[in-house]
Length: 112
Length: 112
Image (cartoon, rainbow over all chains, first blue to last red; front, top):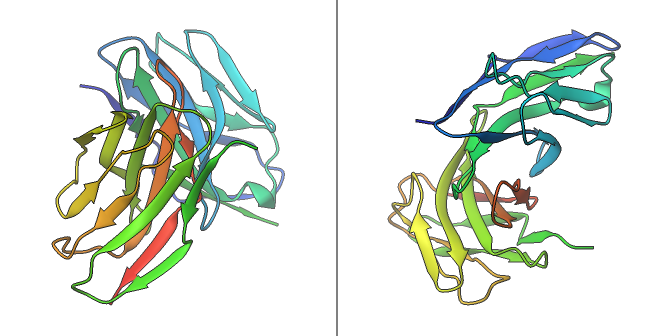
């Protein structure tokens, strides 16, 4: 089946630290991959996406590269800010499917 | 601006009462979805609809009902049969293909 596995949280970092949140997937077809961010009390917002192997999605200083050989889509940011504190979800959809498959989410806290 | 509107943001009900959560989108998306999120948890799919007058059960449909009479509207009714209705409910929509989901800002339902 199709599944997404994210690194366990919570993750706590100091401001200006380097961030990596790991995401790996299994897929029966050829997926498109997404990262979403959820701030407290809000819905999910699409952060970035990649639709084919070696694509790099980027937004607001965050990046993730679609690695087919390692079935991974790790989220990275070079220097995090307190305002990046949120829950991050990795997700995929298979071509022709009707539903996205989500990881369990990773809670990130950035301390000043 | 196009988007998804969920109302109300907070909803309180007594046990044994049915309650309907509203979801309206002006993105002209064909597909709409309802998710449930419990504290510190990921997303669980309740119902989804690909076209007007048609919908499918998700992973946790018991105790919930939906209708899709108009393309832009997908209301969710939480019935008295739902054992643990207190949760954060998220509505989402998307176009077909490999497109991502767009989410509303959620309704927090508290049943006492």
